[in-house]
Length: 348
Image (cartoon, rainbow, N blue to C red; front, side):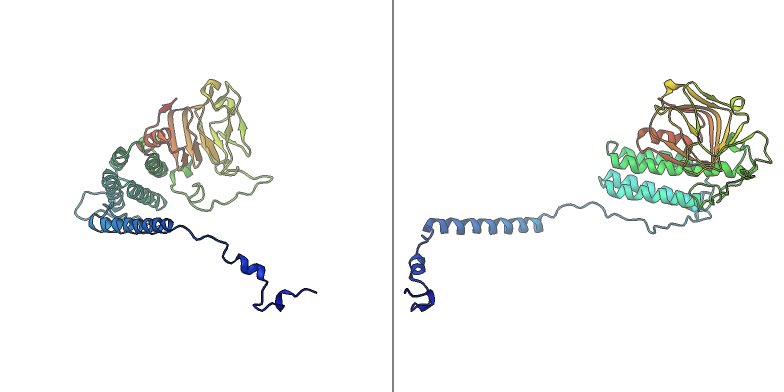
């Protein structure tokens, strides 16, 4: 009977002893090569460290973030300056800083400053601030200068366009607070009270109106020509919506959810469909502007969308509306027109 592994003198089988020297050690030159490569690697890291200390990389100017995410627009006039609101001076300062940062190549810092200007404008709108007559053209020109620092940068274009849209939002809110100025003549008494937090989309929690027997939309009993709707209205190609076809000149959609479309043209939203809306005041809910020819129309308290298609506005006014536009050159063009108080514009 053979012995087991544990019965051997060394505590292991002799077969394992035979294999202990079975591996051939690496040649001497391999060891030399490994040592040389390690030395080269250490020397390279040391050289790069010395160069970094002797020749530091130039850094961009420090990014200065907005002082507060919940900016409060300052009232009153700037001390020692022209008779303009202090918040307007803050906007101008932010945009000037954005231009400076963009000129030095610090595009991220420029975007931050543009966003700061936009937040100030938004705060001014929420607080019912009124801008001076020159504020609009100066702000639009300042945004143009910011974009010129890097006109081919898509992200900078997006931030600048969003600031333009905030300016257009502010202009729309002022249209409601100054009825009769700039040719704006809202059809209802409530349109002269801006911002009205119950009808201003997004300004506060808009209450949901009760819908049921006998329910009427605001102004329906006091303003002649009211046509109250509670669901979207389809418009076919070659369709015309005007006081004659509608049965009134005031289309009241305040009973509809604020995200619902008031008028639904063909899905192509193309000028070839020749859809026209003329001579109406439309209040409440939402509307996409693309592909429709709008003439002598006043939008009140609506969410208005522009998705970058063809648009035609002739004598069109925006009262207490919120604007959701694409952030490319076409959206910027439309937002600029509204911010500058223009009522007619066409984008093919």
